Image (cartoon, rainbow, N blue to C red):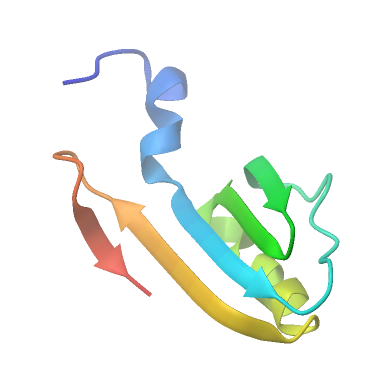
Length: 82
């Protein structure tokens, strides 16, 4: 179990995103995107709910081969998948 202030626990409200892309997506510096990594054509990041539409739009512009988004629940299981 994690404990902390609201600010320290904010990451628990983010949505985990993983996408396999045909071309790079411009997500660097986008507000609401955290822990962004790109390995080859795979992109992984944590996204604030308010920024999800913008992220999905930018990914869609690169021809997405696969996409997974999940908000993780308190017990380490997906609380909801998109």
